[in-house]
Image (cartoon, rainbow, N blue to C red; front, side):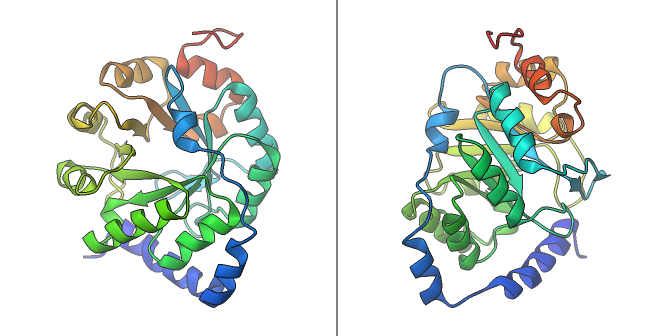
Length: 263
């Protein structure tokens, strides 16, 4: 039976075919790719870090926010103390675009995560060309060989990689190589069900020298405090921030900072 993840990947593959250009052209474009900003270093700074997401829609919640100016929203995230800004580029279910990515990266100085379902070599090259400092690889959506090859390819191109897992089996697969940043997503992308207990099960198993990121369903300070107690180093938050009237204040609240940004 086809899952939600299967359906999303099917659409992504169709959309990639429309954008694909010859490998020779991509190699040429790589020569003028933007200088990278070091997402791993940004996420490694003292204290809990936040990856703030530009997210218009999701399969589980539908429309979240119009976001007429992704760049302005990203500027607010940066002013609020975000370590990284995540931009959805998946078109069908999340209503994102590469145009959004370009606008965001031009508006801010901090690293940018390309948040998409990466399932082809072309997307990895494309990510480097547009200036993705951090690339998402979802273990559930990749074969074992794709995961290894894509991680190596992205790393060789200079990008940092956020490896996303949802269960014990995926976590074990993730560590068949040497990931530097691992995200635990509490939302099952095959059913869209949310289970915060996944944080409790998986985060403590990730080695301390790896950046541990908690993803999905985070909206309150006490949830962040619990993630911190489990060893989480960073949180990825979308819905809560795009719905907030004041994203800067929302970031401060989640991270337990006062109005000056002090912990």
